[in-house]
Image (tube, rainbow, N blue to C red; front, side, top):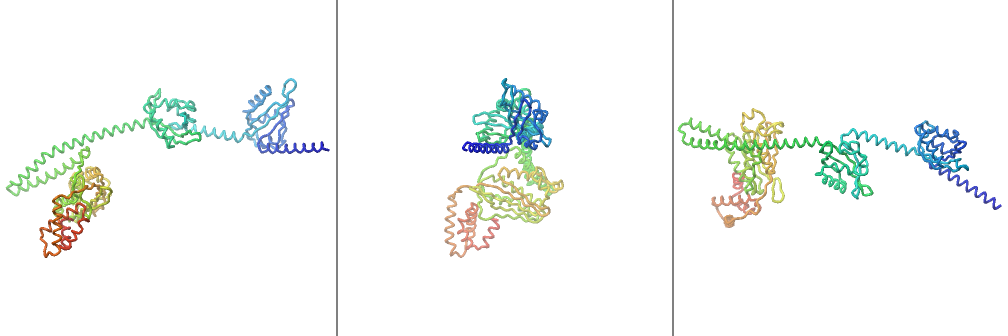
Length: 594
């Protein structure tokens, strides 16, 4: 009884083991087979059929049937491998394509081993398996197809597509490089798969260190690698290359770049030619400007003599006709001198011969000088001329007073020249500043002819005057605004223009200037300060104020205001306001202080 129970237990154990194997085989995509070599009969399990899309026992399998199911291209190699292993009595493994139930081809790996032989050593039985390799083979083919497509595309490009891998121990390789590597480096891509030394030997010795350094920086910062360098090819000579690649870091510490290298020799040659042509043109321009500057200087010298002689003749002229001719000569000479001065300044600017001065001056003096120069000219044309300066802004600055005077005079002269009526207004304002530097705004407004948009775009070009009618009517060289712009550029300033044809124009200068530091109060100013104190005490009970004392004190206060010290003298101004009356102060501000 006990033996029977043991038998039943063993049977149940075998059945459970069989089920486990069946489940394993069903889920593992592996089919088992058993080949009786002498009869040729092959027993397939259900998985061998179902992996090919057949129903189990769809057909009987023999060795010949097995061979006929194999793809014609794989059949001979499979048969030879099986026969070779039968002769050796060893295990075989080969991949081939089976015809599936759908008519397609299905990749499997066939494995087998002789498990029984006769007394003479001849094989009697072989068992083995079919392993599903279709998915991996399709992926492999897709990868190969992608590589072929990439290779075809890369062959159409003028440069090299590549991967470059750099290891922490200094080794480097190119896992992939297109066939253009042979053209650009005279090295086959296959030579670089494990070692890139052959490619680096082509890099020009003078550029090699720079190239290696750029690769090192890119690997450390994981930043895009970009480099232009020369290579020396045995049959061609020196060529210029440009490489661009993006890096990524791997877990083993290596860095892999994906990039592209192109031949830029022609572009570099063109660039060098253009650079040389530009240098030659600049040299020619400087030589022309220097010649023009010298000639203008040589012409100006005798012209000054003519103007001087004209002034002497004007004093000795005996008739109105003679005085009229001399006056015309003087006017024409001065006009020609102005034009020559413009040409000379422009030539100096072109030849980089202008050197800006750094001297202390007062901005108020510049505006006063401009007003004195052009007030009578504006009045003669029936044009109003006003000046306005914002109160409380620092006026003692350091810079080139004469060049600033030249800039403002040019703009005011143009405003009066191109205005037939209305008003020309000169304004000074403070735009901002940091530290010891202030940015000033100087505006020249007019109600003249204005200008169209197309003229605004070319107004700063040398000799530009809109059209010939403007040149005939108003005269001039057309260099004034070009000189203004170049001078402002040297002074780190700028010029903005707004204009409307038939309405007028506004030219606004933005100019940074350094303030004068620690303007000393001299002994004379100390005396004025004492006088002001004494005067202030007398003002409270005085019946009248001597005008000469008022003028002296007003001059003193105006100088303090020019130095930006209005707040310091607020009390003194209040006392003058009280003593003299607001109208007197306003009149002084209008007549003397703008």
